[in-house]
Figure: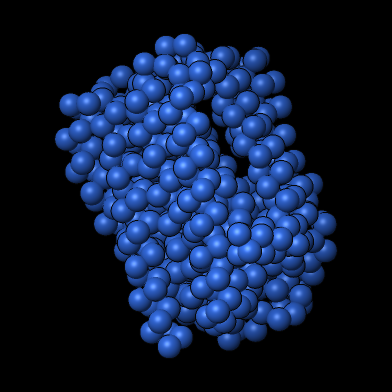
Amino acid sequence: MKLIKSYILSFLNRSGMYVLLSTVVSRIFSFLASWFALQLIPNKELGIILFTYNIIAFIIPFSSLGLHQSLVRYGALLNSTEEKNALFVYVFKKGLLIAFLITAIVIVSSFLIPFKFENTNYYLAILSLVLIPVFLLEIIKIQFRLNHNNKSYSFIEITYNTILVLFVFMFSLFLKEKGYVTALILAPTLTFILFIKKLKINFSAKINKKITNLKFWKYGFYAGLTSVVTDFLFIIDILLVGYLMTNPEMVTVYRYVSIIPLSILFLPQVFIATDYVSFTEKIADKKHIFNYIKSYMIFFTGISIALCSFFFFFSEEVLILFDANFTQYSDSFLILILGVCGILIFRGLFGNLLSSIGKIEMNYYIITIALVLNIFSNYYLIPVYGIKGAAITSAFLMWFTGIFSCLWFFYLYKKMYP
C-alpha cells in the first residue's frame, strides 16, 4: 500500500490529475463524436470513411519520419529551456517539410490504388491533409510536457476534442459524410493555431548539431516505424474484416464494438504521458526505476481485475448505447476487454521504458513479429468466426507483445546499467 500511495502522490504532484481529467473528458467527447457520426451518417458511407481513415491513421505516426518521438526522448535529456526550444524549432521545420512531402505522396498514390469500396480514393486524398496539422499539434503538446507544464498539455487535449465533437455534429448534420471528413481535418488545424503562440518560441533559435546527429534521426525513424506497425496492429483487424467479409457494415460493427476496449488504453497513457519525461530523466537510477515498475504493475493489475469484473456483467448494457443490434457481439467485446489488460499491465509500461533507454528498435521488432502473426491468424479466424476471430487474435497479441517487451527491457536494462 505504501508503494501505491507514493506512486499516486507522485503522479498528482506532476499535475497528473489534470492529465487524467482532460483524458477522460477527451475520451467522452471522442465517443460523442463517433456516436454523432453513427447517428447522422448512413452505415455504408460511414464504414467506407472509417476504412479510409484507418489507412491515414496508419501513416500519421510516420508523417514526420518520427521526429516528434525524437523530440520527446532527447528533449527530456536536455537541461535548459533554451536547448529544448531550439530542438523544437529544428523538429518543427524539418518535420513540417517531411509532412508536406508525405501528404503529396499519399494524394498521388490514392488515385493509383484500385480499392474495393466506392469513393475510397477520393476520401483518402482528402483525409491525407490531416497529416500536417496532426503533426504540428503533437509537437506543441510534447513541448509543454518537456517544460513540465502538464496543465497546458491537458488543456490542449480538452480544446481539441471539444472542437472535434462540435465540428462533427455541425458538419455531419448538414453535409453528412463530407462534413465528417471536413471536421476531422479542421479540428487539429484550429487547435494548433490557438496554442502555438502560447509556447513563445523563438523560431530563429539554432540547435547544437551534436544533438541532432544520426542517432537522433535513427531513433525517430525507428520510433515512427514502431508507431506505424503498432497502429497497424490495432487497425489491421478492421482492414481485414472489410477485405475478408466483403461487407462494409461489418467494418462499422467491429469499429464500434472495439471503441470502449481500445478507449480503456487511455489509463496507462495518462500515467505515461505524465511520467515519461520524469523517469527518462532518472533512467539510470535503478532503485527509482524498479520501484516505479513495481508500483505501476500492482496498480494496473487491480484496475484490470475491476474492469473485467464490471464488463462481464454489463457488456450488453454498454453495447446498447451504440446500437441494440450490437449486443449480439458481446462475446467479441469481452474478448477485447481481456486482451486490453495485457497492455494495461505490461505493454503500456515496458514499451515506453524500452524507448526511454534508447532501445526503440526493440519495440519495432516485437510489434513487427506480432503484426505477421496477426495477418496469418486473421486470414484463418475471420472467415470462420467473423469479427470474433479478429477479437481473439487481437487479445492474444496484446498479451504477447506486453510480456515480450517486459522480458526484453529487463535483459537490456541490466546490460546497460549493471
